[in-house]
Every structure is written in structure tokens, then in C-alpha cells.
Image 1 (spheres, one colour):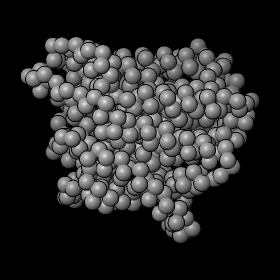
Image 2 (cartoon, rainbow, N blue to C red):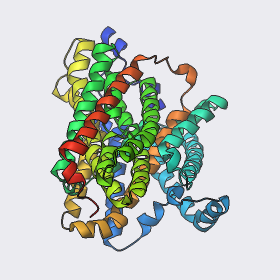
Image 3 (spheres, one colour):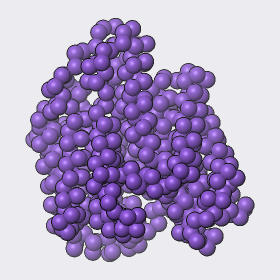
Image 4 (cartoon, rainbow, N blue to C red):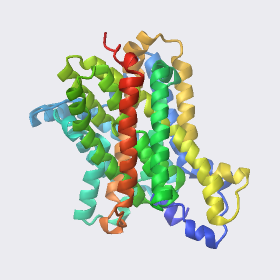
Length: 472
């Protein structure tokens, strides 16, 4: 394994080198045990199966081991300390389980175990701290979503403290995000997606496609930015910001500064929309269901959207309708596009961009070797969960399946995302990031305007009757 492969760097697609020399031969079938994509699938599907067996047997083992302090809503440090004093053994067992699965797999992939173990323990302890911050009672008010807190904290630590290079062995950026994306698929059974109804799915599709294409066109055609940069910006604005940006960056081989710039823009506009959409909705006297759908259409982060929908729902006297509208549009409707856009842009990168950069079109097997397998894992996990939950009625799904099976996987997925974004921050030096300039901001902002205006028209005028029926 090369030094670059072992480093976990995002910059694994060297386009200039590709133009000067033929691409290196693929690993072939050895990639089944040497590539992070496959290990992410093994781990993601494996966790899903273990969670299912635990759920069907009536055991609460997986549910207990998915513990995190993010949902505490603590207001005093005494409450936080009490939580850890009661659950310290669970956290220790959880850490050992993560350490075992990641430690064994990274050893097989060529990472030194004596370096990975202490590095991951530090990463885990920091992750607990990130969860604790997000579990503060006022966290949603300030959009302190766990992965975002992890990214910011990691950046601060890495640029204030000189970390030894060997710690990078545990900061496996791509491995953690790919595992999280596969687990994301397990939390999106197709039956859940269909339950959103044709209106939510159509509106989410129209918004996702329109926003992504507008940002991509502005970035690449108007401002001349790199195609990979345009794809990360486009999907970051069209879907759910942080995790979507990371998935696309992995799919197309984007540079780290492309990802960092996109995440920054997502966070800024997520914070703006927390204030803007509820304020305008209040001024116009919108029904909570309509406002919730607009929030779900135009917000850029789940935590920020939930905060905005909840705030307006309380103001309008129907919190349930606002949250329901937001959930159908954002958490179900738009977030499912992570896998779709990853698949589309991965194919475009293999079939079109690399041909333009290298002068040759890879053959069918070469496309397969280069294709990001974690996208297939996302779809496989979704189909698997669809098959095992198909027999449950909608009411039973919400009361039985979701708390007993889906939510524990969601928690473990969030752990993987926090590991990822902490690792990004801890391996990023501000001096390594190129100056992004004004062009990415203008391209992204154009997409934001299209997103917000189109979302308003669809939520209020086109499908207003549908959304105003929520919460009754």
C-alpha cells in the first residue's frame, strides 16, 4: 500500500499525474480486503445484521451499545457527570468494539496497529466530548450538530497544537465516512421513503436536481472552477450539506480544500436559514405544515432545519405539523439523494472527466475497480432493511421498528460521522488550504437563492393544500 493510500488523504485523484503517465493498475480482487470501500460495506452491513438479530431476539444489547450523550439535553455539568458515572462501563465496551472492528480491518489494510490503537482512543475520547457539546440543552439553537462541532474542534486543535504525525494512523477520514454512508442506507428503507408520499418525493427531487445543476453550472461554466469542486458544491447545497459533501468528495476524488470550503458555506447558510425562514413564515402567517415543508426544502443541515421547524411550530401553535413537514421533505425526501448523486457523479468522473484528463476511456473492468463501492453498500443496506421491515404496518414501524432498530443504527452512524469530521479537522492545517476566493461563494449563493425561492413557491402555492393538511 502506498503512503498516500495509507494516509487517508482526500486528494487521491491526481489529475495532472494522470495526464503525464498512464494510470496505475488496479488492485484487482485484492481490493476486497485492501480497500476501505469494501471494509466500510462489511462493517456497515455487519452492524445492520447484528442490530437486526438483536431487535428480533428482543435483546437490547445493540441499543445499549449505541449510547451517546448527544440526546441528553443537559443544562448543568452535574447532569452530564451523572450520565457518565452511570454509563461509563457501556462507553468503555463501546470503545473496545469500535477499536476491534476498525483495528483489525486497518491492520489488514497495512496500518500499524501500535499507532492506530492510541490514536483511535484519543479520537474516541474527543468524540465523546463532541457528543456532549451537542447534548447541551441550547445546542440546537446554535446549530451545534455533532459532526460540525467535531470538524471545528478538530481544526482548532490541529492548528493550535502540533500533533505528532503518527496520530494520522487513526484519523481514517474516508473509512469512517464510507462506513457512515453505508449505515445511512440502513436507516433509509425504501418503505420509509415511499411513506413520504408522491408530493414530498416530487418536491424533494425537483429541488435537489435544480439546486445541484444551478450550482454546478455556475461553478464550472460561469466561474471556471474545477468540475470536482462544482460537484461537491452542488450536492452540498442540494442535499444535506456536510455528509453529502463528504460522500461526493470521496466519489469523485475531490481535494480537501474543496470539501472544507463547501462545508463552511453549508454551515453559514444553515445558520442564516434558522432565522430567515421562521421570520418570513411568521410575517406571512404560513401554516406550520407549509413552513415545515419550506424549511425541509431550503435548509442545509438536519439539526438546523429541526431547530427552525420546531421554533416556528411553537410560535404557530402546532409544533407537530411543522416537524412532520420538515421530516418528510428533508430527512426522507432530500437526504435519500446522497446515494443517488454519489452514484451519478462517480460514473461521470470515471467515464467523462478521466477521459478528458487522461485521453483514454477506461474499460468496463477498470470502471468497476475505480467505482466507489461504498455507494453500492448504501443501496444494498437500504434494500436489505426494506426487505426485513416490509411486513410492518406504518404505525408499528414508528412505534416498534424505529426505536428498536433504526435509531440505534442512526446513533452508530453518527459516531462514524463524528470520527470522520474530527479526523478531517485534526489532519487539516490552514496553511495547506488554498484561498477559495469569491467564486465558490457566488456559485453557492446563486443555488441558495434558487433553492429558497423555488421551495417557497412549491410549498406555499403548488402543494400548499397538501402541507396544510399535516398535524390535523
